[in-house]
Structure formats: C-alpha cells, structure tokens
Length: 385
Image 1: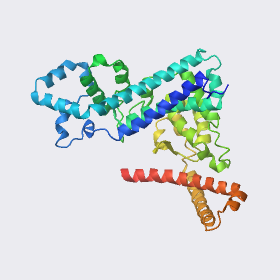
Image 2 (image 1 turned 90 degrees about the horizontal axis):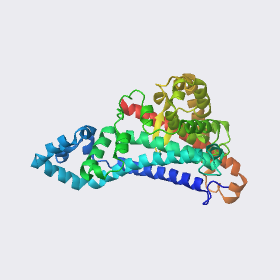
Image 3 (image 1 turned 30 degrees about the vertical axis):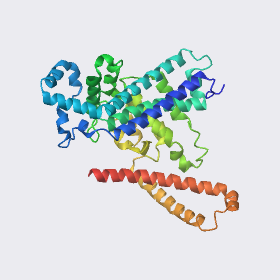
Image 4 (image 1 turned 90 degrees about the vertical axis):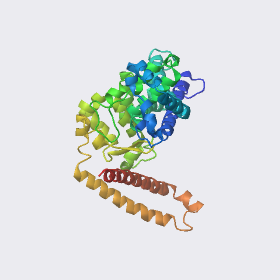
C-alpha cells in the first residue's frame, strides 16, 4: 500500500506531524522578528517603566511575593494593566507557540510508540524507514523538532522566553493552564546567549528535556548516513556535485546528531564516514531558511567530529577547493555568455542540447552555492571583528 495514500492511517498521521512542524517554524520566525524589545531589556523612555513588572522563572518560586509587591503600588498596578492591554495578544501567541512545540514532540513520540507497538497493522518502524516517502518524512519530523529547539534558543533567548511565559501565567491564571509545567520545562533558559560562549553540554542537555526514542534516532541517522534520502544524486550525477546533491540531508544530519552526542564525541569511524560522504568539500552549510553554520566552530568541542573534519579543513585542501571553484566560476561565466546571446536559446536548440544545458545549470548552481556560503561566513567574521 502507498504510504501517502489517503487510506493509510500511518502515512497520513506522519504527514500531519511534518506539516505541523513546518507551520510551527513559520510562526516561530514571524514572532521572533516581532518580539517586543522590552522583553530583551531594551527599553526607550516610554517602555522603560514596564521592566519593573517583568519577571523570569524566579517568580514561580514565590508568586505571592511578587504579586503583593505590585499590589501595594497603585503606580505598578496601572503599569501592569497598561502592559497587559497593549501586549496580551502577542504574549498569548508566544505561549501558544511554546505549547505547540511541546505538543509536537509529544505527538511525534506517541506516533513512534504506536508504530513500534504494532498499532498500524501493515507498518513497522523498519518498514516505514525503508519506504522512500516514509524515510523522508521520518527524517524530517525529527529534524524539524531539532530546528525548533535551536531556532527558539537563538531567536527567542531563554530569559525572554521565561518573561513571556510568566506574563501569560500572571494574566491568565495558572489554574487555567493545562500544560504549564511542560511548557516551563521546555522554555527554561539553557545558558546559551547568541554570540556568547556555548554552555557545557549544549545543546545535548537541552535536547534531552523531551527526548525521542534512541533506537529511532539511531535508525534515522543510519538512513541519513547511508542513503540518498531525496534521490538527488540522479539530478546531480557528477562526482563534484555530491555536496549539493546531499546538502539537504547533510543539514539534517547536523541537527539530528545533537540527539546522539556520543557519535560526535567518541565514534570517530562513524564521523569519518559522515564527513567523507557529506562534508568532504564543504564545512559551511545552510541549515534552515538562511541559517548558516560553520562546522569547524560548531563541532570544535566534539573530539570525534573535530578529528573527522581535519582532512577537509587542511589548508592544502581548502586552497585546492577554492582554486577549483574559481576556475569553475570562470567556465560558468563563459558558458552563460555564450548561451544568453540573442537567438541562441530557441526551442530547437534547447531540445537538441538539453543534457549540455542541464549540466551547465547544475555546474553554475554548485559553484555559486559554494562560493556564496563561504563568502557569507567570511562577511560574518569580518562583521564580528
């Protein structure tokens, strides 16, 4: 039976989970771009007064103390009421976002449990991961969860999340919140500050707050290691195009490996296999929607991952890659100039030369992508100096 058939309960449930994951990420991006600056402690003369009624999770240890302090001051009561009236709508959206992330991983774990226990009579975990569509969806579901956690911590830092949740609890009343304990556990600050020092065992401990079955994680990593999950090698058949062909699942591996940090720390053979297949000529990758990471930095604290990257990051290899892409760029420019002359790309010429044109398009895509990613990383370094 086709896993994506409307009659297949297992497939439809997995599709809904992945669809929800993408919707959550879209909402996260929207809210992150519109977070009131006062939650970051950045206040102008008008909003500065609100800082006195914003609390982190210390509030939850003794809420009566904080509420009494506000209640004793008419000025603070007025400020509190004004802040609630002006910001309650966006505060509620943030809380719903955090709750939806928790519900996402809860539903995903429930699906994995049902799958392993034979709830779907015609499917098992192994069978779904062998199915081309099922393999893609299972990898994406775990990847999306990891991206949610990492993007939330980068764009809505822990102290900001805590203040948003406390505001929601104060204004709505904790008794009306069914999942407040789970949400507070999810959003509690990790110690990570964008641009600052990475805390010890981050993001491994963060990912373990609501863990996913280790056996499933291992099976997903194995599929990403060994398979062409999206069947892209047939689209980019040239050996020099391998990094672009596997770029999507390489980004997935980068995120999913944080669910299995022992591989990054100590399994050198596995990491060498991963690097040789996915990162042998590329150490700067696009993870999600313009989020670019430099593996030489991100994996620097993991012994096995760091050692596996040594050949890729060798100066001689970097010089050879740069020289190769510069020469490829020159050739692409010459090909494009020839093809884009008036009267060349007529219908008859395109039909007769489709393979040659497709190869030129692929080559341009590969070299431009590689140079752009590394140029962006260099710009980021210069901006930080």
